[in-house]
Length: 455
Ligand code: SF4
Image (tube, rainbow, N blue to C red; front, side, top):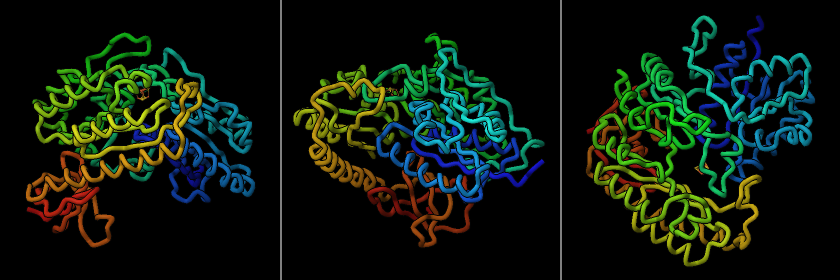
């Protein structure tokens, strides 16, 4: 057994991709590839890609260009491209980047060790990108300590106290700007018993916070033929909350149309469910929401926001917004600005619209001028920054239960952690360990974080 083989994984994009990279890292570890953060040491390189934004895709191609030299110096190096760009580009990617050995879509990550094996035997190229309508996520099997002596952290996983667990993948919604239904296929859910078994194992290994992941977690329960096979998401949340050792539960991402009264009720009744909801709105204009095929009106969205705040008054809301969608008028943009003032989100991820291959909006006319998009984005981000700062100042003087993450990145010897509402707090205090919960008195609200002292 050659134990000197090394795997380097680079991840772009969302938390789903981060979790997929963890899974690929674990599989490569059981195939005797130990992780490295030095790309020059690698025998296998996996680039896990994202095509949601044009910029992320460009970064992938530029990284692949730089890696070409490594392959010239070490011809046995195996280069694998995974994720949405791999799915979208398929064999075209290998034609454009002939030094790439493996192109693997999100449904096929479980085949990675087998494909690496074939590539090592000089069987090239290795594409695995067909999307199966009957796709199911492989059953959960607990990691075998005999097969891998590596700790999860060593293979690039999240720290032991904080874990991400995929509960479903794919999407049935076909928003007109998005490629996910074309790159990850239709929604398919994991059986609840697998999810609970995985979370119980993680809790035994020290996990205190779990985030349930999927493209549309609140329609959890569907399988790939579109039928509801498992319990609905609120029931799953209740089951997960019974796992001993888990203290905080989060989930992402959600579609507003699937936000049910039962799920809203969970924020009042499931104690471990953290009071933070990322609820992507995308636009404040009903006309644009229709063109985006979002399947809700802004009035329905606001009703749900109100209901969430009634169920859990301290809930922090965050969102995603696209500016400059084809045909977005000044009036539409003003409706989005109005929405910011109405909801007063704790934070927002905002982006300029960009055409994505395969997405329907690529064929829409009335594309918005780049400069107009940039101006709108600037105006929107400045307003949201004001609101985020005000929101964070509202915490001043309060005492928050903070889960310690580690030493603060601000370099002044403080600790860093997160409130239940998912806001970063940097605070002074005695020696702590990651995952430890402490009461922190908030002394200052800043734009992206809070400052405090142990209460
Ligand atoms: S809900 Fe819409 S934006 Fe979200 S993944 Fe599905 S198609 Fe994409």
